[in-house]
Image (cartoon, rainbow, N blue to C red):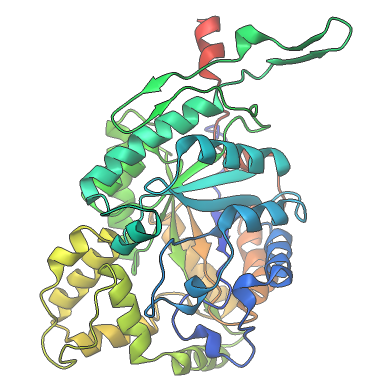
Length: 443
């Protein structure tokens, strides 16, 4: 992004099937098979692309149990669904979650490079370390890596994957039929990585794509997670509940990134938001009540369980002080567990009270299209966000956002009217990553 380019917000949409909570699937208009319905995802993808969204986002988890939310109980694997959508869309980015704790760098490099080619340069990788401890049992492991070790693994893992993505220089494929030269062997490179966790020879058996390398996404809120995101991520997904929280996170992560020698506009920071839109204030309130009516105490307890490594909260006294479970959060989802503990301490909440808040959080994004656009603009211009990743709270909300909020953002000069470039990286304003071997040759 050049200095003369206007700052415009980025928008992503999260494909979440039957919904993000434990009770969304109960809505009368919700398809209970949506999380494994390609027609459903195709409709949402095309609708988001019509609204000029920058990307689609697929979250993931590798472990389920009786407390898991319905969407995670029965859902598509990210690379598979994104590959299918790549052939049915033209411009929108395709971001998939894949864990470094239970996969091999060579396979992951190959999968995302393939998605990048299939989509003509529209792939992104959301790098996660996995926090649910019982995931280890699905991968022949005796135990789950400790939190601090997971981020050491992740750092080396990205080094390996990005090194493999550079195996082929951009002009390595010659294709000289007359001369019988398919590839310039001097421009095809082995990685020969020998590290603490991985030993990978290379080269990767697929070349670089139109955007050079897939875009790196990450979500980190713990100290090690923030440092990792500030050092390595190009886009950061986060979950602040208020503008003040968003501003604190934004300022902290940008400061950390600058200390690592990065530019002032890196990385892009995109909070997750869940708008509830009505064409009038009364209609918006009615829709929020409709959403709230689906919630239950079990839904709130489910959020708690997920944040604290699937700990069972049902056997505690709901009206007693919140139990001492801080230690459980240290090796789990630290961002969620720390945020919950801060709320509990600030407002002196019981277990029942925090569960009720988590079941149907209201947030700042309930209102008319104009009010939602105002709030998005305020967060963006107040340095709380570089853009947003949207959840669909109720069936039909994505269409309302595309038809009524997007045009307002465009009229205010806050959002592009069309895709300006052919690759995901260019549309985000991110630089093309020069192949390391080409850079060495030029130097």
